[in-house]
Image (cartoon, rainbow, N blue to C red; front, side, top):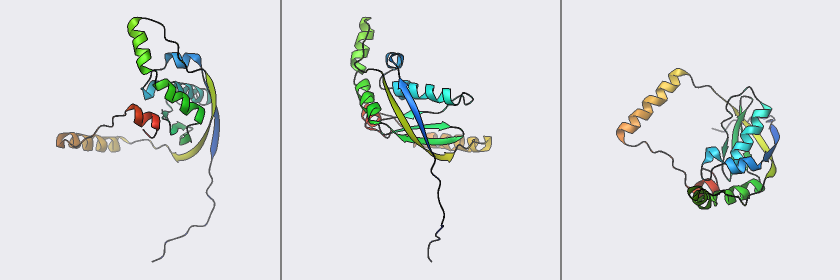
Length: 165
């Protein structure tokens, strides 16, 4: 039996977004936390300016990819080199930041404000989970916890920074 071959053109949609990481993002961001990372905060702020009607863009950042939702679709972009290098430098300051906070001293980061352009490819449409599907997920999760097979993902610095967390 031969495979079916579909002839046609697949339309790939690309969106380019300019992101500015400010000094406030660097100072207020927290090392080793994916939700309070300076690049994530700056990207989320830019997406809110583009689409203020969407309350949460579900932005995820690591050194490999930046993923987010925009206009009802999933988007994925490779992390630009400048953002990747600054993300690594930012996460390596974790001990120095903690020491300065413990001693009550101001911390000055070696990371300077920077700009980058995200070139994101549109993926699949965002699907809303129905209450029946959510109940099915919760039941399965409770069953796995009762069996002792529910494994939580834990992200280490290496996994997050090297990418693909």
